[in-house]
Amino acid sequence: MNKLSEKKHTLSIPIKMSIGLILLSLGFFLFAIPANEISLGASSISIIWIILLYFILTAAELFISPVGLSTVSRLSPLKFTSLFIGVWATSIALSYFIGGLLSSLYPDPNLPTPYLLGIIPINGFLEFFLIFAVLTFIGEF
Image 1 (tube, helix red, strand yellow):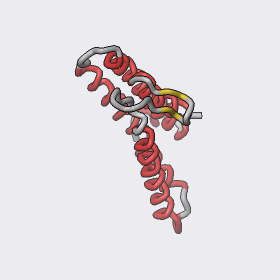
Image 2 (cartoon, one colour; image 1 turned 180 degrees about the vertical axis):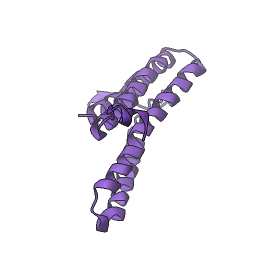
Image 3 (cartoon, helix red, strand yellow; image 1 turned 30 degrees about the vertical axis):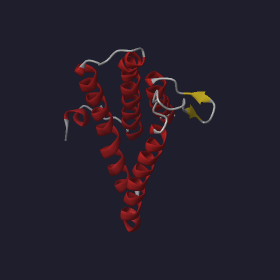
Image 4 (cartoon, helix red, strand yellow; image 1 turned 60 degrees about the vertical axis):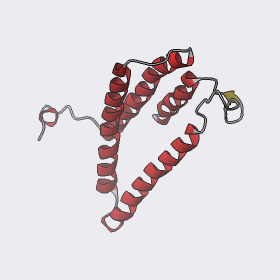
């Protein structure tokens, strides 16, 4: 047993997943700051931003992935455990696919301005990273 469970301070599964999504959203919101500097003409950003982003996204991953996998394996009927773990893995693959589609909105100055849903222009890196920040924040609800 760990120290939190000994003190009866364990976090529920939805709380752990919510913390992971909040951290993920926070990471993208924070990375929008140096991304905006690049859009405004800066030639580089500090390595501290990259390290901070990786730290926050890794912490978010540790709240989401193992918790989700253990929840799926614990709550699924024994007969269908492997099927539901496959569904979990497929949902991750689908999210990577959607992320790849959204990455086509990357603002390239040599190409026409991309539009999200055909109506929201993505004029710079700030808007590009805010897409991911807002989507992960909305995903919490």
